[in-house]
Length: 54
Image (tube, rainbow, N blue to C red; front, side, top):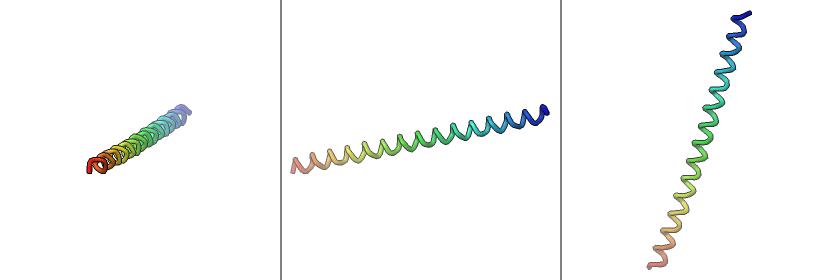
């Protein structure tokens, strides 16, 4: 019986670790897409400035 309980606990721990990893990956993707949006915005600003200067 004790062995079965230990196995269940280990499985639960593994699942929790996997969930944490998934959350971290999702956060990473959010950061990346935010970064891309900022880059695109900055590029537009620069292009607008260039158009104003010419």
